[in-house]
Image 1 (cartoon, helix red, strand yellow):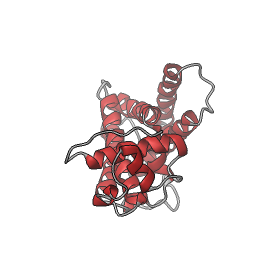
Image 2 (tube, one colour; image 1 turned 45 degrees about the horizontal axis):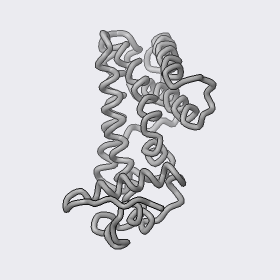
Image 3 (spheres, helix red, strand yellow; image 1 turned 30 degrees about the horizontal axis):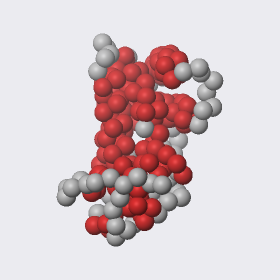
Length: 213
């Protein structure tokens, strides 16, 4: 039986987000209703409509929270680096660490088509996360540690690698005995990635690549 929880005026919105995350953990981001969220949050079935027009609006709030936490995770991990290239590598570690810590957010952020368009907060938070990655790449370029030119092709390659690791890790497809060992592997992978990107000639483009929004 879903537990009820008291809430006071002012935190209903977050209570609904937290309840949605609990449901996502159980049934995924596609198989629940606002009525179920309300029941889990211990509020009336009409209460969610004070903040969200529909389930997708609630999921956009979950995604926005996720993108903000992702940016924080990358920045905090990168802050441990002593050089631009170390910060770039560690930002990738921070990406995977976020995905392992918040798999429900991760699923909504990347498994719901068009989620960024559902709210201004979500779009802004998603843009800031990508901008953080671009910033780490550009810092390396300025220090002549990565090839000069457009940062986006480099960032996209890096993102694809750490995102793939994250998806495999969340689904339990990577054969590691512990999360610590998996993150250790992630560190070695991001070091290898940075080394490989540094070997590319300047200005290598990706055909058909669109500019960031």
